[in-house]
Image (cartoon, rainbow, N blue to C red; front, side, top):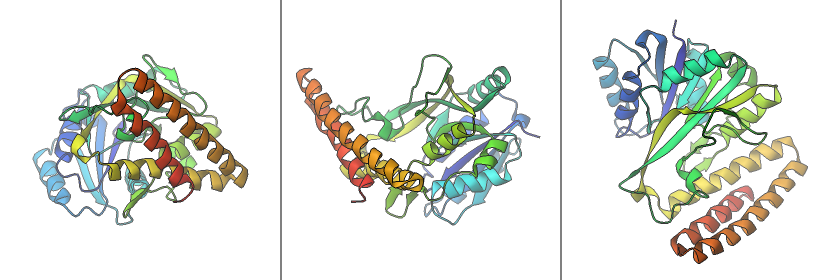
Length: 302
């Protein structure tokens, strides 16, 4: 019986998937202690062939391939979790690369923090070829950049792990009901995000304590040529769309509070952009403001 199940949902990432899978195969953790469940989510490239070839050439490890025809990461992750054999579920993206001690550090954490309900780790962007001049810490979340603390720390009330590096007990995953499929991630030509936030806020409401461990590290491949205004709009507006659905499900008052919060953040982004101008970094001005405009558009359903 494996100690941990890693679930990777994948959609048209055949180019990057082999490195993600190889990073798990080359873990320091013994291969009989983990399994990797790959969930193909209607890929139109050669993802299936890539997966089948990898599994056939790495038979001394437990790698499995499933298909989920309902589009969206939430559906795919739930499908993978349903067949997972381990008591711990680890969710990693198809364009992430795990450090070699990734799984061992996860098991070490849960052995030392037996009361932990969930865990998030560090995500380091690997820019190809280089980090764009306009990138700043205020928009880095759009490419999955995440570092919460220099040491192990409990997430504060409104903070939570990112979806591409999160670990939970399967029993708690089932108790929450898995990921909210009303927040599917990418579906068709739009994105409706926030499934991780929704999940962990529900988990916290059950009294579970969620931690961050900076030693649990993956790199996230970011091709800068794909960071077009259209791509950034889809991600940022997807944040807003997800918050619209999540807060409206709670109540109209919560939705109105979220609108006020987003207007406040837009105002703050204008002030921040002026600081970049004063610091001689004008390239960072517009993305900070545009992020908040796009998120607000998504929230207001534009």
